[in-house]
Image (cartoon, rainbow, N blue to C red; front, side, top):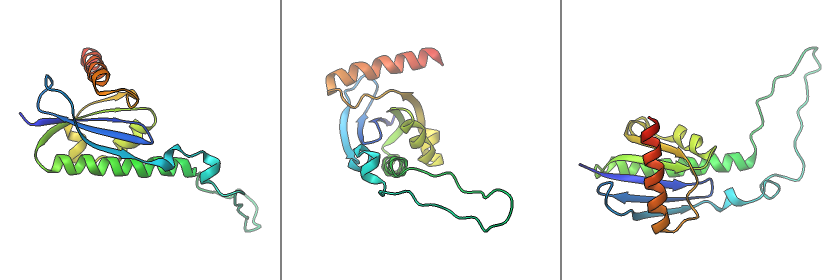
Length: 152
């Protein structure tokens, strides 16, 4: 049986762990931080919003929905984390991945995963565990996985 990856993340930090089996302890692999995701929106956005003008023809003007700079930073970090997961799975050492991340970052992260990583996804849980130490994290991961498996 191949080792399993466990990711504990939110939109500004991600902790990647590995373990040989479910009964083995989580071993830290990587810590990724994205300080821009922690910044206030006012620190990321320009002082004044831009504006659009119409071509003076009657009827509506269609604009693409505006995406905030903060959301762009979250998507960029999700892409960075997904690429790391893809690289680890691509090494052949790991057979599956479990994601624990806060919502909506969990959805952003899942959308960035490659098709191969999506096939290796064992579970994804909407839960931010980034503030816990390793001992408490072990307990909470085990509890969450038990509840997830019971529900499915």
